[in-house]
Image 1: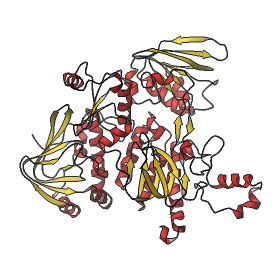
Image 2: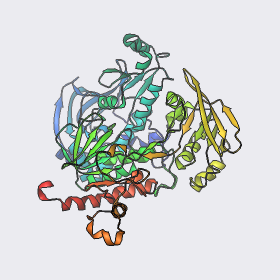
Image 3: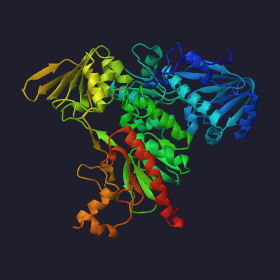
Image 4: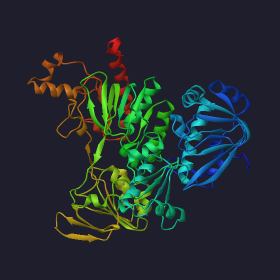
Length: 587
């Protein structure tokens, strides 16, 4: 096979700078597979070592081998992918001047594909640490490499290859949850239904899963799991590294939404060691936005997923360690350094902690709501959910910006979108440009003064919902199979009970002047006469020294992506200030 560029077709996004179709992507093959010149190859050798491999030798294996970047100096390397269930297929052969790497290699995670020598091969092996140093030091080459890494990941997602294989009935709720988890994290995967795939049926016959054990998951290394949890799947894919070591990080970020990712990028780029913990998927709630149109610098809009994906790669570029899914259970601040205990019992230590843990989706009080989650009730509106409601009538509950973005996005797939809101209109909680767009979309109907009061379904999932008009008392049964809930969120602060982080009446974290004012009131003083007796506190610092709060979880924050990113950047200078005040033996 020729060493020309691969037949990759990246996924389209809302971002004009990345958007590409199957017709025009061929013009970007030089970006997906750049070729280094002789002069560039000589410069690259400063960052790695040359290794020789004989014909047929395995250079790397999916799911087990970790490397940074392999540059082909002589010979060819055959790259294959697992189709699942013992099947592999040749993706391409790579010749001299080309390089092998993918986004996962920035952080030393396992490869998603396999590589074998075709004839005698000489390769330049560059470790993940050296690759990050190369990208920063060699600006022009670094830009080309990062662009190629992003496009390659997008291509793997588009062709559904290079990751785990999920085997199960299409209507299975557990299958949907795992598929949503992988898609939200931009991880390639393949879904096979045993009803129409012989190999999947054979695997099901071998393992004989019970209804509760669907889906079966085949990891890249061949291991088969029955209905794994997100954490188990994350460990299988290298997304959840071993955090049981003795490392003490400069900054521990809890939550990898826009605010947390901004902190990670700015802190790591300034030489601080950073660990980011994310309980589900990077990007937070913003990652579920179909199109963000009021973010500075993107006049045509950008999807939350695309924006978060760029920030995620940028964080890895600077050496941030990101653990997903890693749920924080306790913040322990009675000893130095600070500690965060995870739900699996692991404790991680840091000199400073940044709380950017956002909010939890609010769930309406419906008796059988949990029964239909993932089987007709959804809290996100990604392309996965959009495919499910093609040419169907759907209900979307909520009147905020996230609800408006979801309604407009889903209207391009569903036959009709019924927006159900409790208030008298959208103006009080939604941006005007979204209100105008909803009004101009003929298949969106807004039902005011209305709330859902019941859900109905069968063994296959949701079959209908009943809503009530609060003014007239009139009830209506709607035969829908999809209900989307965007009814707001509560601050994710319950896990802070072991550390005296001050929160307001709604549970949002107080910072800076807000903490000082609350302390004054607690002591019966006004701020002017009591301020001198209180410790100096930075604007984003909580009531606990060294613990900061940013983004949606912070009391008084502006609930906008741009504001969250701004706070994530601003907190880094305050972290530097805190670290500078520490005694030398504590630094």
